[in-house]
Length: 134
Image (cartoon, rainbow, N blue to C red):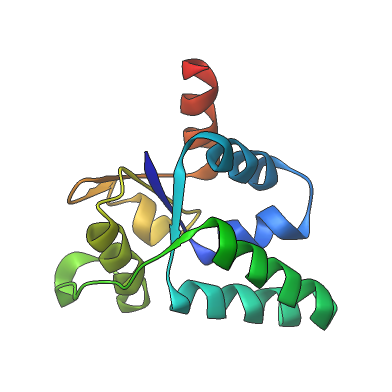
């Protein structure tokens, strides 16, 4: 399964040992994680500014993501596809990657429930679905 992670989920996965970290590891083992350059930039900003991670750690995380994730480009998304225009890029990435799942904690995305082929789930929802299958 192809999975797109929102940048905040990725930041949480690398900033703390918790649900997002466990979900990322679970998806790494049996699924393809898709990111974009924009998501990588957001992860870099978040780890640097919010988490205050040291520069070498941030570089290591970005290198890991580049090595272990598929990097794709978003397709254009209609302006009315979501409430928050800033979310259009992640919807476009999910569509471009033909991802089965988009993982986010963003309420503006979660309210959509689906975009094209992608079901939109919170980290908890996807984690529970994957754990039931295993």
